[in-house]
Image 1 (cartoon, rainbow, N blue to C red):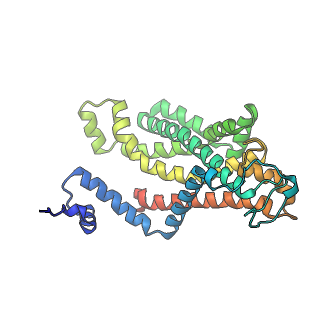
Image 2: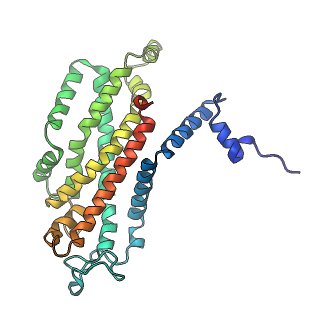
Length: 308
């Protein structure tokens, strides 16, 4: 004898359970809120295009060795500067290397730099902003003046200065970009903290005897995360452009590494004769930047409480 499955196990039952206006538990309320946000995000066509493109870039980076048709570093001077064909889908560069395979492996380099920068700057920006906004006083003044110093210079110029002080390469480029990317995040976290630090629920937590560090970690920082996620998603396009700019100027990834900016720099002299050679990595930079911008805009519409 078979037993009927619970209501939430059927597709319609699960939907009704998620969209219930009277959730029976915190778990149901959390899942219901997440599902409503997903429905709102899914209704945004441009945001979905951005999400699909970003997922495609991630998959391309993960499976680049399997998807590539050639060794990205293999030189074949007899096959140099060939137009797109069945043998070389996007053509070849000035050393006869397959452009499709190099752009594909360049996705690994670019997204790897993006992940490294985000892992570095997000915790720093959140910690500095929340601590400055919650503590206030001379601590706030000192931290914000340091932030203003970093924000006073264009990102690329400041990154170039840091890389020049270190040594050209991916590691130096990641550190330089991270040092220029955290100030806007700190400013945003501080602004969010200032709006909630005197809220009734924060005062209630204080009355229970909770210490300053516990309040910051358990109650203030989590409320700043949605805005931080949106800002990071929007800033990724700038990180990609800065990384490509450093590579183009010879201060980022070094040849023969297939980084998009480096690929453009080494083939820029062929823009009028063999236009596809520098154009294809440029299109890759454009698509990646646009995809993260569209994704960030969609996340802002869903996560930013000011949009509601």
